[in-house]
Structures are given as structure tokens and as C-alpha cells.
Length: 206
Length: 134
Length: 288
Image 1 (cartoon, chains in turn orange, cyan, brown):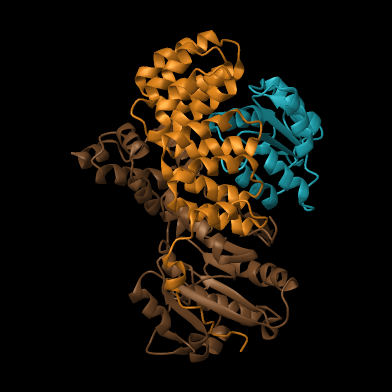
Image 2 (cartoon, rainbow over the protein chains, first blue to last red; image 1 turned 180 degrees about the vertical axis):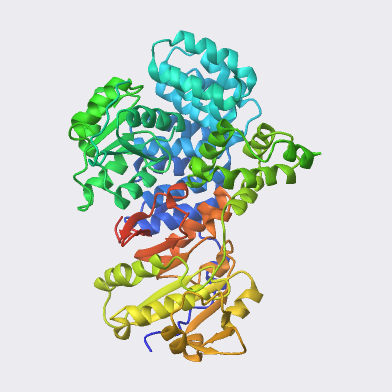
């Protein structure tokens, strides 16, 4: 038969009993082989003090599988220092890095929340859009309120559009009045009118 | 929004709309279906690429900022794959920086638009880039 | 109280509520429901509303959306998806295996290299035995290669059943009479037992996917069948498991998910590939 009963190696407890040293892992983090870097990124989870080095590595890492492991390790820290660093990537013109940072921050709700207020009023409208996208995904009791805050004051159409999107999912009846006022502000903009009408019907108010 | 009735027996042109915003996808769908196009959706670049592999499309409308995989990365995958690489694609971005034009064309876009897109712009571009009326 | 309300509602939610639910569900799972499925979706939401004592759809949706544990979403996914196992279930993936994946894999293998396939979870064994039969029957090169089929599950009782290899009429419903004769021995009425040669050629093991001690034994896998498991995990569990599978696969190896599952909600490190009518996922070849 072509089928053979494969025998797998037994779990080798001894080899992994002692975690590899920090220096070794940091060296491996810059190794030429992506597999070696990925393994180091995973094992550096045992060294929370390496978090900033992992953030530095993200800026130069080209392998998607290593990047994804770096983010996994960083998300696990749930650290606000890491959240501040990752938030800086929201300004990057590297689209994959920028979007991965948004996703990572969405998974660090407590760590990112203190930073969000500042990001929501950042002078760069794209950073504000990212902040709104992070906010809308959080399980935050005040998320809806904050989104209403955005549509009240933000001048930029795409920032408001992102907030309207969020309100379509998590907005309550208390958001409707501000949504109607926004519709007046952007009267004539076909997308905004559509989006606001959709959000209001999703909220379930006539 | 203009109404175009497709000729009986002529298959509708098929557009794939790739955007993480449900509202934006619904908007594109509403505008394009009214104009006689057949529309399918994907919510990120991975799903977008899967759908491109699964069925033929006349045009891709691809948002840039999406989770899991951005629009440029998705487009690069499409252009790398001999079975689907010729499909026309329009990228849509919020950013109005000059380098976005470069990025769009480097990734393999035929055209790019800034959002929010008006219904007229959308139909015009879809007809132009997707190869004629539906 | 909630039961009375559910009856009062006439067992349905509004079109807007349906749209809101579908948008959320699609965002989280990649599963899309059109208006044609409204009845199907309604019933299950109303049931969950009753189970959770929710007084309105809004209350239910808000509770589910904001729940830390994500448990209600998991219940909902369970309620929405049907999971039964039988021989040749989702057979288009076995088509892809023998006509696309295996031919592609052997292009970069040397003579004598094994081909390693992992079915996880294997449940009561229908999947690994289906893989085996498909390979033997439909891959013209099966005699030229040593093919290892590994089958794992977290549940020792079900694993024992898989090893015993006894199946009902229902389970073998899609197996042709010739294949039944070739690979099964009829037992008492309505029961079929997989032949000894096949039973003996599959390596069964007890594995909990979230336990690295179990999973690190699996290395250099060429194909992983992980169908209808990940959809029941939360976001973190899914991500961790997908990354683990990545590490278990040899470069260029493949992973097959269930028909309503997609990597698009889990990870972008795999490359979607189309074979025949199905999408499978490939770990990049070395150097990426």
C-alpha cells in the first residue's frame, strides 16, 4: 500500500524546558532566515522588556509571517507603552503596517483607550479615521458617545463617514439627532446622505 | 442615478467591490445595480483575492485601507497570478497625497479615486475602465 | 417572559434588524446571508434571544456585540452552522487534493520523501478514511510515494471510535457500492467496518490544538485538513491555532478549511490558491 503509518517524534520535553536567553533571541530577531526571526519573535514573549525592540523590528521587517508573529507577541503585552508606539504607525505611509497596527490596537482595548482621545483630534485626518475605526471595534461602553462627539465637531468628511459607519453598528437612538444634523451639514454629498440614512435605519428609528 | 436597461440575453458586467465598510459596499452596490451591473462584495484584501480567483470579473473596486490585507497588497497578488492578472482595477483611498498615485499604479491599478465617490463618478469610471456599458 | 415576547413577535425580526445582524455576522465570520435566508436566520436569533432572556433584538444585539468573552457570538455561530460528519463530506476538497495539491507538492519532493497529511479534528474518522480512499482510488501516483495520514482529536472517546472504524449506513451514504466492497466489511445490519489494512495505516493521536506540547510533534506537514473547527473558536484562539498550523506545515504546504470558513477572517500569512472549484491555502515556499 501507498499509505504508511507515520511515526511522529515524541514530545521532547527537555529541549524546550529552559527558555532561550534574551541575547540569543535578540540576535535571532535580525537573522537572515525568516523562520529563525519568527521563532525568536514568538519566544520573546517571555521577555516583556523586549517590547520596544519588537516595535523597532516592525519598522524594518519585510516578511509577513514574521510581522504577524511580532504583532501577536506585542498584543499579548497589553501594554500602554506598546499602544503608544503602535499608534505612531498610524502615520506610516506603509499601508500593510498601518492597517496591521489598527488591528493590533483594536485588540488592546484598555491599553489604547487613554491614547484614543488624543488620536481622535490629531491634525492628520487619516490618523483620526484610524482612531475612529479602532474605537468602533472596541467593546467600550462609551464608544457610541465618543463617535457622536466626532460627528459633532470633526470638519473632515471621511472622518465623519467612518464615525457614521461605526454608529450604524453600535449607535443608539440618542445618536439620531446628531446624525440628522450631520446630514444637513453634508447636504448634497450623495455618499454621506446615503450613509446617514442607512445608519439611522440600522439604529431602528423612523 | 441613471437607469440603464441591459439588452435581453446580454450578460451583465460583473464588478467586485472590496471595502471593509458595510455602508460603503452597500452604496456601491446600490449605485451600480441601478446602473445595470452585477455586484459582488468582499470585506478585506484576502477575501477579495479569493473571490477574484473563484469567478471572473470585469472590474475590481478596491479600497486601500482594510484589515488583514490592504488594497495594494491584494492587487499585487492579483497581478502576480496568471489566471486573473488582466482584470481592470480601480483603487479608492482617502489620502490625497501625490505618492498615492504612484503607489496605486505601482500596485497595478488602472485608475484611482478619492473617497467619497459620487454616483456619477463611480458609474463613469466603471464604464470606462470596466470596458463599456453594462 | 422572554418566551412570551418571542411568540408575540411572531418569530421574526425587522428587515433593518436582519441587515444589521447580517453585516455584523459577515464582518466577524465571512458568512453572508441574503434576504432569502431571512427565515433561517430569524428562527435562530429568536431562539438565542429566548435563551438569553433578551427583551428585544436591540438588547440581544448590544449584549452580543459588547460581550467580553464573545461567547454569545460562538453560540450563534454554532446555531447557524450545521456540523455533521460522513464519508466524502465536502468532496470537492478531496478532488482538489488529488488533482491539484498532491501533483503540486511532488514537483518539489525527491524520491523517498514522505507526504504527510494531517486531519484535525478527525472526529469519528470519516475524514481521514475518506482522504485515504480518495488518494488510493484517484491519485495515479499513490504507489510511488509513502503517504502518511495523521488523524487527531481532542476527545478520546471519539478517537477510539475512529480507530475502531465502524460506521452507520448514514455515514457511508455517499460511498459507492464498489468502494464499500473494496474498503469496508459489513458487520451487523447497517454497520460497516473499515478494512484492517486502512485502519492500520492511519496514525491516530490525542491532540488539543491549543497545547503546544501536543502540536509541536507535528512538523513538516504537507497538507492539513482542519474543517469546521476554527469557526467555533474566538478571534484569539483562531489566530493562535492558525499560526500553529503555519509552523507545522512545510514551506509550500497546504491547509484546507471548511466550506463556510475562510482565512480572510483569520490571517493573511497564507496564500489563497484555487484548485478545481475550491479555495485552499498555501504556506509560502521558503524564503518569504
